[in-house]
Picture 1: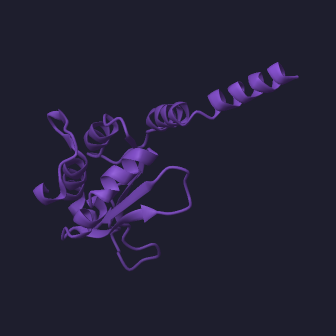
Picture 2: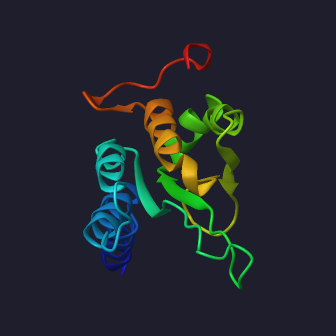
Length: 156
């Protein structure tokens, strides 16, 4: 009986390995990226190269012909999911606060309790999507040259 219990515990620990869970979810999320708004894909690809995060949702934002019509202006947004260690590192370094201070930003902060990994939501006015995505990439260390390590807060 003891050997059977040890096998079950081993199988469960392998099945619920956080690193394996993270890698599987990241692969699926990246594979499911389709219907991405024009211009966003290069930024999403840069961000998704970082090992400790991946993009979940994104939208440039939209201004309808009649902004007062039903639905109105749709703000741009991106959701970035972090593994638990990276969430503490990046968010602890003040990334949400930094992005919130930018003039294009409408909101930047964690979405609590909805996901099992920390998720940062950043939103902006539709016309500011390019500046927003450049700032998000810069703040998280995803430059056009490749992946840069996170920098201390005061260098942003």
